[in-house]
Length: 243
Length: 243
DNA sequence: CGAGGCCTTGACCCAGCTCAAATAAGGTGG
DNA sequence: CCACCTTATTTGAGCTGGGTCAAGGCCTCG
Image (cartoon, rainbow over all chains, first blue to last red; front, top):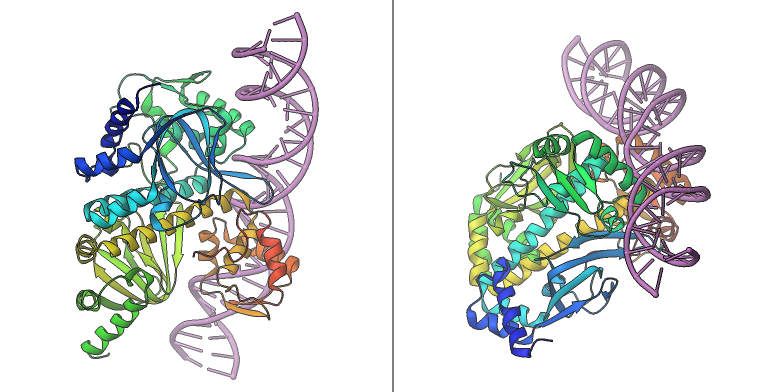
C-alpha cells in the first residue's frame, strides 16, 4: 500500500487530467483531492444499488464498471459501461438524493470517489466550473439520444460494429488491434441484446467486414469496410466521437 | 396582433412560470423577455434541422413539437415530442455550435425563443441559475435512461400505456379523460414503433385494460388496471414522474 | 482430471416489420 | 349539403430479426 501522501498526489494528477475539472484552480483541485478516496475494487463488487443515498461522485481510473437498472420482473437494463475516464454519480450534483441506477464493477477497477457536497459547493463558487458540469451533462444526454437512435435503427451486427468503432481513433490507416475489455455478456447487455444474439451477430460482422476475433482480441484490417457496413444506418458517420 | 408591450408581458409571465427560471431575479427575467420572441407556428413548419447553427433556446407554450434525427438511409428517429412547458435547444448552453437534432412543429404551436448567449451570460453571473440548468439537464438525461430501458424491456402496448400515464397526475381516483394531442403516426415514432404496430398495440391495450379510445380522446375508467398492466415490466412504478 | 463458467450452435417461436388493400376522416369546390 | 380527393388509420397476410430453451464445446482453476 502506498503511503497516504503519495496516494493523494496520484489522485490529484488523475483529477487534473479530466476535462471536467479544467476550470478548477490548483487550490480547489487540491481541496478535492484531500477528501477524495482511491479504492481498488474486485470484479463483481456492487458499488451501490439503485435508490441508495447519493453521496459521492465517482471517477473510473482503470477497469470497467457497469451502470444498470433492474425492473420489478427482474430484468436488467444496462444503461452504460464505463472505463478509464468515465464519471458516474453526477446525479448527486443536481440534488437527487437517490441514485437512479446501480453500479457494479465488471472488471477489476481503480475508482476515485469524491463527496458530492464538495463539488456542489464548487459549482456555486466557480461559475466556469458550473458551465463545465453543464457541458458534461449535455454530452451525456446527447450520447443517450444517439443510443436510442442506434437501438431503433441499427441491426445487432451494426451495433457491435459501432461499439468497436468507439475504441478506434479517427487516425485510421493500418490495421487496428483492440482488446475487448470485458465479459462478452456485459457487452451484449450494454448493446441491448442477449448473449446468444451477440455471439451470432459478431460472427456475421466478422464475415461481413473481415475483422478477426480471437478471444477478447479484435483485429481490424480494413477500417473503412467496417465503417461502411456499420454507419450506413446511422445519422452520424464515423469519427462520430464525442467532441 | 397584440401590441408589442402586451406580448412582452405575456412572455414574461410564461417565463416566470418555468422551474428553470426560478432562480432569476425579476430584472434578469425582464432582460430575457426583452430579447425573447414569441411566434405562432403552423403544423409542418421546420424550426431548424440538424446541424443548423445553434443560436437559440426554445420554450413551447402550446401545441406540439417533435425533435428528431435522420439517418443517411432516410429513416427518422424521433427523440422526443414536446408540449406546453417543454424546452429544447439547450445544447446551445454548452457551447455546441450545431443543433444535434432537427425540430418540427407537429401541431400548431406558440413558441418562445431566447438568444442563447443571454442565457450563457446569466449562467456565468448567477450560479444558482447554473445549478438549475444542471438540474434540468440531469432530469433530461434520466428520462433518456428510462426511455432506453422502456424500449428494451416493455412491449408495444405497455409503451403506449406508459406514454398515456405521463399525462395522468398521481391524484388518481375517478375516470380520467385525455386528449391525445396529435397525429398518431408521430406518437408511434416517438415510441419507437411503426404506425401499424401502434394501431394494433392500442387495440390490445384497450381490451387488456378497459380504456376507451375515440379518435384522439382517451378515457380511462380504471387507472389502477392500466398501471398494473403497464408498469409490471418497468423499474419504476406509476407516479414515476419527473420530480 | 473434474467442475463450473463462459461462449457458441442448433431448433424453434414470436413480436413487430413490411407490403398491400380496405376503411375512415377531413377538406374543398360546386 | 354533396361528390370527390387526399391523408390518416385499421386490417390482413406473410416474413424475419432477435429472443428462448437446450445441448455441446472450451477454458480456467482447484
